Image (cartoon, rainbow, N blue to C red):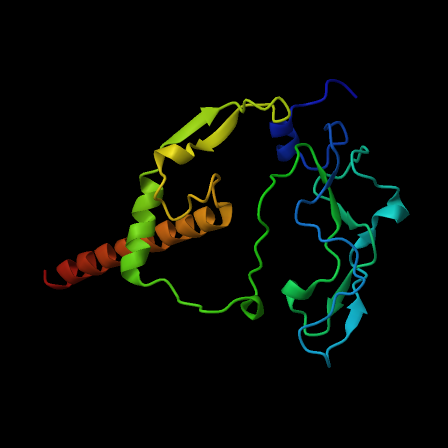
Length: 204
């Protein structure tokens, strides 16, 4: 089949069997569904047939795979009838990848799992947008030999007070949310400029 392309090339050609891919365990897995219940006691669990069992395709952590981004579950997946994604009772996933998954916190986005919800106001959105714009991107290698390859990101000590700088590590969920704030802020400014241009044209 020829030389195996590097991971960056593999990502561009998702169907290539020649990519060096293998099954990786998801860092967000919470094991088997025994003992897991829905929020509403009257709610029941039903099987989710769309997720393939790893045992049926002989997939194990570290074994080779051919379909990039394919996934399976260690045990039969069940979901609450309410379809609340926070209540998935089996998240012991294996995913076909050419690089190991990032370790970190796996956030839950459902409203049912949260309290004290306060939406970001315009003033705070402007602050978040500036924090993202101020980020000094860097390329680096980890000292840990188990994390090979050139990485792209930012240095935590460069931005210790940023909203997405956590305790000893970057809060990736907060970081991506701040990037959304930047996009929203820029779009708001673009819309305002368009309105000004339209108003000027109307006075001619």
